[in-house]
Length: 121
Image 1 (cartoon, helix red, strand yellow):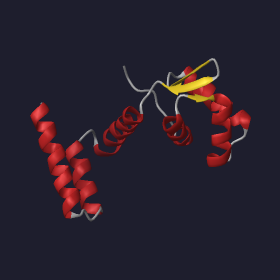
Image 2: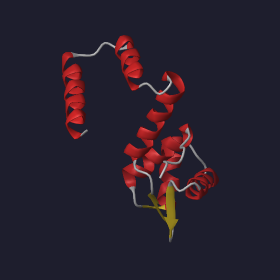
Image 3: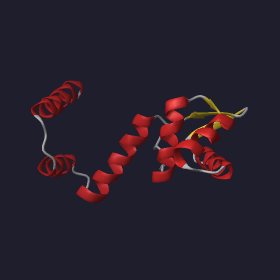
């Protein structure tokens, strides 16, 4: 199943939800007010919109995610690679590595991740 699109402001909401789920909707309104400056109406509108798209569920005033943070991040990365690098992950990694100074530890971690991935294939 394809991960539903989560837009930037919705993603900020989801970060709060992922950190506190499952959470009572009243408490979620308070958290969104504090962290995002949102009104009660805005928070409930986002909950409704994300519920309709299958990102969250709101049952008995308890909100929880149907899409994990990792799945949302992976979907966003897939979209970026497809749109910007014509689907080429090596082109994305090359562009990223050229623009950012990577520490030896970061390079070692990337190599380890690639080696681990190669073993799973």
